[in-house]
Length: 427
Image 1 (cartoon, rainbow, N blue to C red):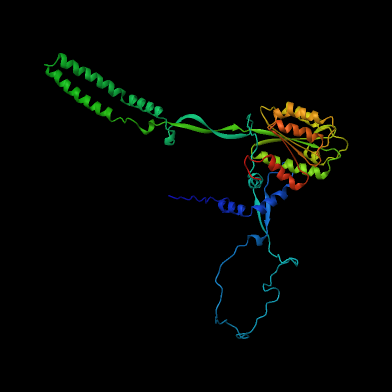
Image 2: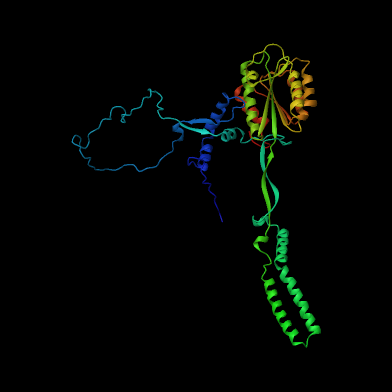
């Protein structure tokens, strides 16, 4: 038999969850564009709000079927003293409504307000990551952010039938029957022994025979009493008890490495910022606690705040290995790989001191990649230099290392999707 389940739960202010989901599916393209635009003005940690989406009212209008007036009709309008059949009536001045609007004139004809609604944080993130999965996700050591799981906690006197513990229930029933019938059973055994004695030694004594008759009558009463004790009573039932206990959830750290030398202008830094923001958003879907570490470098590397990371101006050459060495030192000092899921994201224009690129490959292969769950390198320039060549050799032998190019803002999200695409997902 065909059955259909309809979810009629309300999502606050009498808004149906099902209706909202259908609306989001219908206007997915507009919502996706609004979410992409929102990334431009946000910081990496700015995730505590959703996003306001505007849809032109003309896009949400629906066709309506109705009966037209049609045919010939005659009607009388009360108070009509000026017009007869065939007269043409002029339109009222002011557009017919004589409205009191204070808006300015427009030559576009789009005078209606847009439809505006707000995406929740979860909906905002879902637009980005609906077809993505975190590669090589292994939740290792537990931390101090609680999750909940069920844990066995003895037995209880109530529960569902599937949790019934038969052995414990039968053991309790036996104990109850022994306790309730103990005195009666001892008395019955004593009377049975007395009856047997009278039958054996005093079968011709009238007084003894009367005693035996009373004893047999009492034995019958005791047997009836013992038979009245139920074999299994509801108070005997014992159920496996499970309680929710807090358990720590996994935690991750995201290292953001960026070249801030003179060749990295603001446009290239903006490309890097977009990639870091999207990666951070992605990780929040899998981890409760995420630390961010910002490392900028030119000839020397330095751990800085997010503001300095994206907006500080530097000049001079580039030594990428200085950032990788600093990342390794920070991991040893603060982030034990046995306790943290470590992710690295590096953005650069590919320029590097030519003697240093081999050193970068060695640092990643020997020290960083064994400790990282995933390491992504994004080059924000088209030209391939020696750093790209060394990293290409590394990508051939290490599955947790990936590298791509992104030279304009439109490529950032496709590059990210390519790096973190689900196995078998379509682009």
